[in-house]
Length: 413
Image (tube, rainbow, N blue to C red; front, side):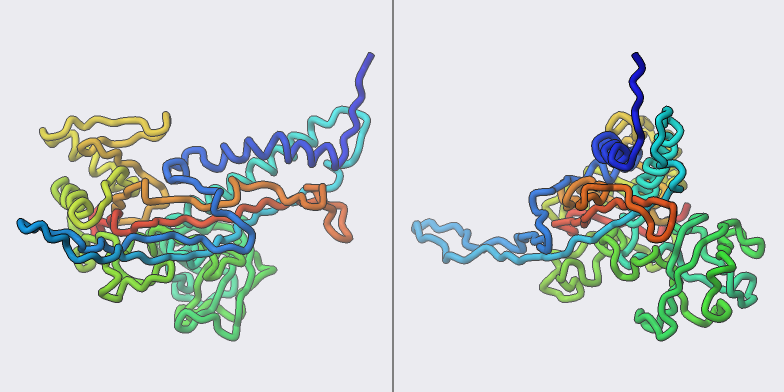
């Protein structure tokens, strides 16, 4: 007796909810070491609530010796509270209605299409998150853009290759800014057609937009444009660039105020002049963290170029064996006096981060899931024979003690 199964939206929704969602959780953390090494906290999640981090800023001072047996003057421990908000990360895919048409034949082809869209959607989400971890929370996905070859254009611009998160088929916001404020020209949503090496400068990428979404006027080098992930202007998760810093405001605490020195990360720079990476310089950073904070460096992260440079030095230096280790069973790490050093493709150039991973937490509602409050994940697009599904995750990445982390910058590579 043959069993005939009818494919329908309810069946597909169940597959996305019960089969694919757990797979998506594993997929978005795969090969992304920071997403695996940071602590995760779902207990603090509550709709509409802030994340509150209690801080111990100084001891009581009520300690002293006395041969006469006199007790020291009592005092109180100094505390503070840092707060932040969850950020909402969304993604959406759309498929043709013909793939979801109910049928009394096998529906393996439809399921393969659904599988392809769902998996690659989450890969896009994970890649965006892996990129944004290293940024400053502004949602920006590239360095300062300029007109291509110095010629104003409505459909192309040039950006530095370094720290470029723009990809083909990505939808971006092109924002004209003045002093960090969106100008009256507002936001233009544009579809990226291609990203190739700029023929006029091999250190830059030439980004071409769909002609159907031209810029508001020619792209002029003097206009002060910024390129952002769509809808994300000043609304992305906090990242390494604004957390591991000795200046600026983080979680509502201004590090430029002398009384807030406890909130400053350890930073060793060279005034903007690049210098060679040296093993003794790395050890100085490790020592600085231990001397100036309660933290211990447990993980060092850098980009591929500096990682290769370090690998060569560790092999050549007799104090080291040039050994490697595996983190979480897959991530190759160099052994720097027992501290693993890993490479991340989105780590910023000329820098090396020294992290106490125990001070980092990913606060989130969950690892993410398809939006299905109405019982259906796949929803018909209005006036169209197409269906779409949305994925969401509420999260924020927090360091509860920036001082236990360090940045070694201005490094040649």
